[in-house]
Image 1: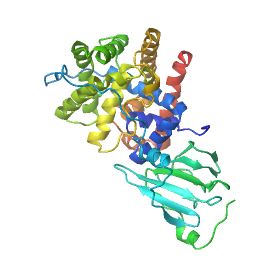
Image 2 (image 1 turned 90 degrees about the horizontal axis):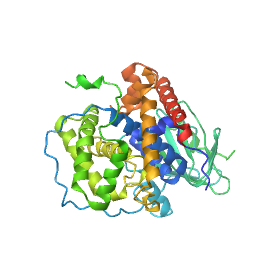
Image 3 (image 1 turned 180 degrees about the horizontal axis):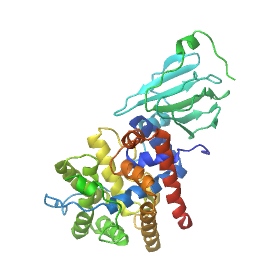
Image 4 (image 1 turned 45 degrees about the horizontal axis):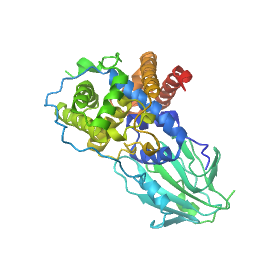
Length: 204
Length: 197
């Protein structure tokens, strides 16, 4: 797995600051767990936060300092299965109840605390996702197969970190199809989805 | 009262040097040393409290969360990995995650104990410690030297917890301008530390 499409620096900065909308954070967090490059960049963004924290003037603490002498310390915490997207991918999406939303196209919304909408999308080989724009940011992480659109080809581990200006019609790999996680700052409305559902569409 | 320090700019760092901070963490991890905790608590507790107050948390809750941040440091000191930055970087991420978790009631999508901590030794080599404290010093200088308009967007994001859209609304700027300022600020910071890589 060679990751060639990464998160944008403004996304990583928001992620580090803790201000990225929840749906985008979930997908960004899954990518960061898979991508050494973005993990390194994220640490740089967190160092900025630390620099600002260090520079803050101290504000006196009112309460007594907690006594820690007898407080236990954690020896080691578990693996990296905490992100539900990664957990579902690890289990090969076995328990995912897919819902058909078009020809060769399924989705599964994932529960999310916070802002935005999060879903898995599965596309059959050659199937295309209806053309859509989005208000707010959208991050797509490829979990199986590949996806192509006007901005390039995306393989497993790649992210398409798109802002609201972009309209695109991604097409799934002709051989392997695609499973991806999509986070939207504002829930997406596909353009004329109904019209498209009434006619078969073809891979490019 | 809040306004008194909202306007303050980036200032020189903590009273205790960064090397000493990482050493304190090591003493907690290896010897469960309450004296090391005391020093870390006195140095970071008040700053974490301010950080949270600036994010809109009331003083009493900020104090609770500052305590909890430092108690998390105590409990997880053995999981600290210098790969994830300096001690202050780690403390910053703990405070941030608590804020997201408690006050935004969202999931902080970054695991706290470094996911790859198992691959690294818990005790950083002496020259790694020096390198990381040098890195942190340079980042602080680079942030302090940013042009005011870039520093402003960075502060609004990191300290006041505003999204890019909220920053755009606050400053009366197009969203694209906010994003490009953030991007340029990041590039400048990275350029300033390029030789350390």
